[in-house]
Length: 216
Image 1 (cartoon, helix red, strand yellow):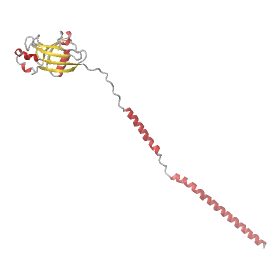
Image 2 (tube, one colour; image 1 turned 90 degrees about the vertical axis):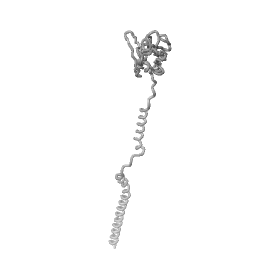
Image 3 (cartoon, rainbow, N blue to C red; image 1 turned 60 degrees about the horizontal axis):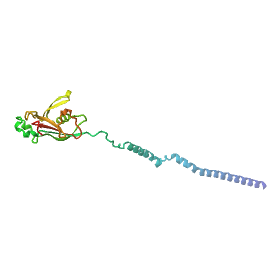
Image 4 (cartoon, rainbow, N blue to C red; image 1 turned 180 degrees about the vertical axis):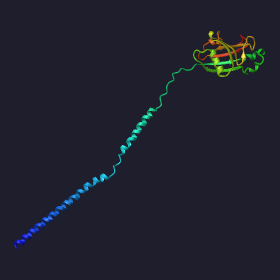
């Protein structure tokens, strides 16, 4: 009887141990299931594509371009206008006329009447520029050449002398024995040649054909 009780107790003890053992295994399995989700985010992070850069980082190049553009605009800024240092070109006036022949048509050479302008003006009063040191003769020669007007003269540089023989195909002696070309500056007749008279600012130069040395 006692042995039977002992076997029963032994069997119960074994049963209890078995139950305890299997209960322990279940707890371990349960803990593993609890920790498994902790590993899941790591796996997801490994399979998840790298997130795109922040918006601020993508704007950085644009800001650089803007700065570069601003610098370029500063470089291309228009320069301040420079003040011209050149001096103003001096001006004088020039007039070439032969209206005196109308008072002496009886002395005018044959064939010359056709070349005389109706108003006697070969070159109208015109403002012209000149350079420092130029003479009245220099101004006349240049303007006649520039406007295609005939001019014939004798120039003697060694004596700084120039003599006007003809302008507009009207020559000396074409309207009398004392006729020819003379010049005036500011209404007065200088007592030396036109190649020796230096032009000054605002001078009024006139080359006049006279049929007599004594006429105005």
